[in-house]
Length: 320
Length: 183
Image (cartoon, rainbow over all chains, first blue to last red; front, side):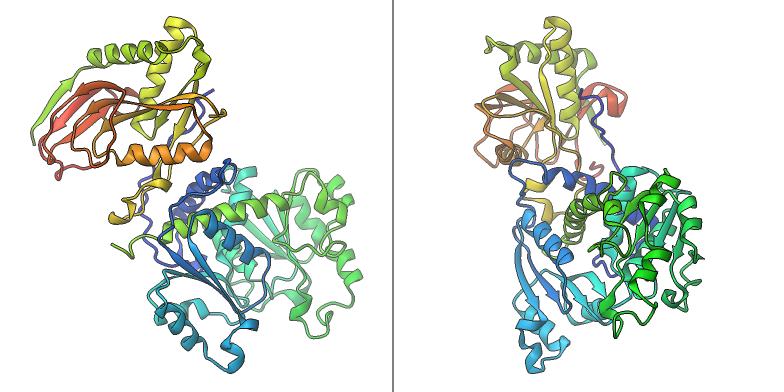
């Protein structure tokens, strides 16, 4: 019974102060974070799912863009670790009065903040913040650039299905151009040695798509037959001006790029993921999202654990 | 550097056997007892004691593994964030008599963290503490219930308990200068 409790030591030196994007993290860094996240996952199942590790830390969640899942997930992770949390959102703040980002963050940091979790519609904001304040910065999404904690939790969830992602085939389907999740995932997955194909309509492919290093396909049958894991992305209607300028209709998108129950029967091996929230009947049929091949809800649970690990690993040093 | 062997494999084995008897002694019902090994050496010690209990008495005692990193009060004084290790307590602690097992009792801070951690898992009827070496220099009002050996030490010295599964031998050493080679 007790023999299968694994005890392993890693001698990896994790030295990052911030998490701005997976572009800065090496394969070893990523694997280290994912390995550590396993042990944080266990806290969530305890009778008292709370540890006092970050009780001396104050964290501000600086959200310039709407978010439900990511923000709740971060806040829960912070509270599970005992940190003090203050929330900032654009709508109810002095941003309305014309205060600049730099002034806002300088003011907040004068209140003795140890870490900042930030989401902003402009790429590069987290990098900018590192030059304004001394706190550790965690990127929770900057424009269409990166969303590293989402990619880390995706990889963590993938590793629960396939413990080694080397040479595993991962397909990412949907709006590649508008997605920061894609960028972080492709960067991370390629570092872990996986094969990545992005699939979507030509209008949703960014100009730099080949620079990412992923293969490109426009045929969903082709990629579903090939992949071990298919991750559908949300069609971000709010980022298109009148909703459907990148494709003729939602119905047509679903016919060409939606995952259906027929696909599940025809290709019995792949697992389904989605960063959420799912547009049921668009990216996939409702039954597909609820099928036993879907691990969408594990992604959400794992998100808290992965974010706890990141908060823990980046919390060191400042008080030494 | 001067290293002195304090206990041999044979000494350790005898002590593990003694612990096995001592753990069971107060219990009419052995199922009341639960053993929890503290990461990392304490886990291997706990397993050795468990093995003796199984071989001698054929009792199947609940065993768990505890990592106290989350509860430590001193981790921010170190440069690198300590690595978190697995915690697995696959049984209900409610109303059990728990024995915590660790290799060395020194300042008492690790034991304090371990008690905090256990309380978050449930409400055991009692917690006892077992260590191989009690080296003194306590900073908190804590003492061990089961001790392998009491060893008056200097603060500069380092006590190392070696277990076969990790270090290829069972032994206890005292090294003269802790600064030269810290784990």
